[in-house]
Image 1 (cartoon, rainbow, N blue to C red):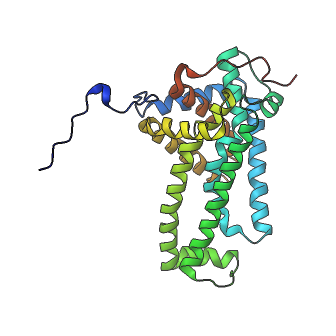
Image 2: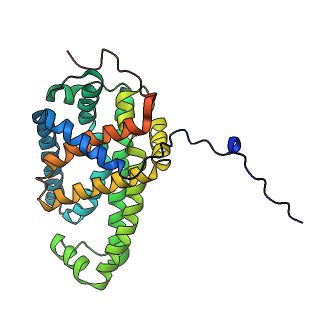
Image 3: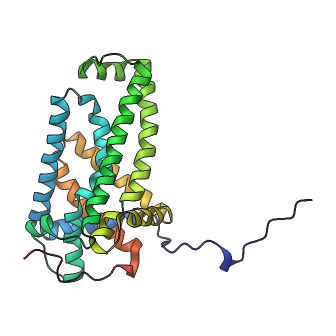
Length: 276
């Protein structure tokens, strides 16, 4: 006869050290705080957003030159993976406003020294490899649905994808696979890059803590993820021009999301964080 499972007492239940029990509406506060950080001193943030927008155009041009423009949509999804790494200068500007009550110029945003040093570059490398893995998966999905045949060209590939039953199935399957990639990448990158900028951590620990912080605060984090997806979608509809404004707002807002979830565990920054 099977014995009944023991009832866990309150002190025996799993510890959730990062659970803040915030409502989903908290994500709107982070968005508002991001907007305030942008408008308080807009030019450095807008210049930063312009630089990332030009970088996005460069990536699309490379794909076009290599006749790989059919990977543009997966590349946009990949941007959501590496976006937190690219926005670390925006996190630093928000940190300086919070902790030092002063503004930070574009030079300081571009050349500040993360508190974790080279671990930040290691985290960026891991996220970049995840993007490459996703692009390769997208390539394999196309071959799975249309066969291993010579690539017909970008225009015909788009026509096959958008106007044929197999293409529609590819879009649905790719969307599901992409959603899994995006969910995992969002969870490990959302808080890890701000953490590496503000704390002395190794990259793998930061990625793991970010996963824990996200999973223990699903409601506000899912709401923030929806805001990020909508923002990037609106920027795509404007031909990426909207990224100039969208990226700074989301970057500043992500810092406030990190502070809200991390709480008082963020150590004060040392005096050597900025280049002279």
